[in-house]
Length: 181
Length: 127
Image 1: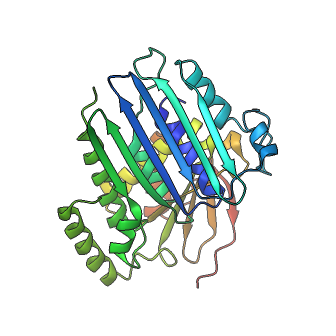
Image 2: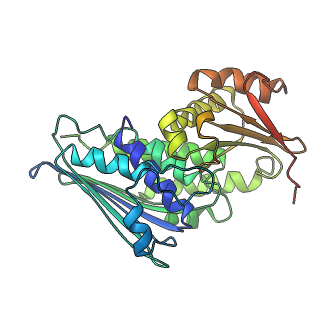
């Protein structure tokens, strides 16, 4: 994928498919240690040890509609190319935690890219899902919790045009406010 | 934590939206964009973005939603358009540059764009 935000979207879609109601996304850009860490934690149905073993096999998928599952193998390759790695932990019935690391300044490290578009795509899921997002660059941080937004909106869905336009603007402003090292 | 000013904006949006009976997903227009790995790799997120921009430019109100992989990976990006009382139409291999014509023909003029359409599904029962 051209941007890390595409990979993040892919992992988030997995979480939605796993039945998660809340997904935490934490991005930390440590300028001093020259590391970028992306952590995604969901409360979906999780995976038993037999499934976790096979998750990096590009021909393994739990989908019934196809015979390849490229998302995680590709992301792990991307991390390993940048002196990083991907760690995944899961428990059936509890959820899944994914942590992917990169050397931030590595020449092959793809740009983070359009995170607002990624987050919006997930917030516009047909089945509603809540995101707790935080992005730290050095000592600055941008956070957004969609459950707070849903509470305020009461019965108005996030897919309402006025809401989604507002959401995109808030996400863009928040991300733009972070200086990018 | 959403800023105070943002909460005020949200309250205003809620009040306006609650009065607005026209934009209900069951009775309005739904545009559904596939967002599986196949879709993302083929540029579905950018297509979603182009759709949002086109709707804003034309001041058309429609719900845009994302779904996972439906199994037609070689045909991604897939865009379904569903309107109350009509069949759901599935469009294949849609790129951002196709979006203006898609919206113009299907939503504004009411014509299915045959060259891109790959299927029709029965109209959803309206609750």
